Amino acid sequence: MFRHGVAASLSSLGHLVEEPANAEAWLRERPGGVVLLTLRCAEDLDRLTALCRLRPRPLVVALPSAEDVSLGVRAMRAGARSVVAREATVSALQRAVSATLDGEAVMPTEVADLLVTGRGGRASRGSVPSVEQIAWLRRLSDGCTVSRLASDTGYSERAMYRLLRTFYQRIGVSTRLEAIMLAHDKGWFEN
Image (cartoon, rainbow, N blue to C red; front, side, top):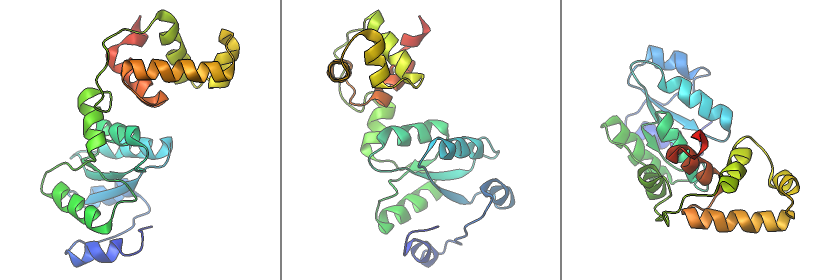
């Protein structure tokens, strides 16, 4: 369902606006169409990945929350052509759709920074994490909670949060997801 004014605004630019129940079937019938896909959860990212496997590759504008930069990065890596925060203005969405149709990619600066650097634009201090820190990240990437990690490693939950925050700062990231993505990018889990 479109936010108030989005459908009318896109229609006023000459775009046919539809809300199909099945985006894959719609894209097969209308190759070259643009899909605006709201991303809220892992299922939405899976849907995006499935859409981007279609040939010819569709024009997908992913709409994650402005607060979840890493989801925008994951959307681009999954094949989205552009990323616009779902809270963006109608005019920003219009520009993104037009640019995407013209073969250009549109994304927030923070998403571009994270795609280019893997660290959201912050420089890493260059140090490699300890074996213990990599183990923490591996556990967190497997779904372990910080509370459980603290208990298993003999730290209080508060101390574990402090240790993780310091560790994230040292490697140049600010969130658990960014740290896990960096670990994958750097191959830290491969050892």
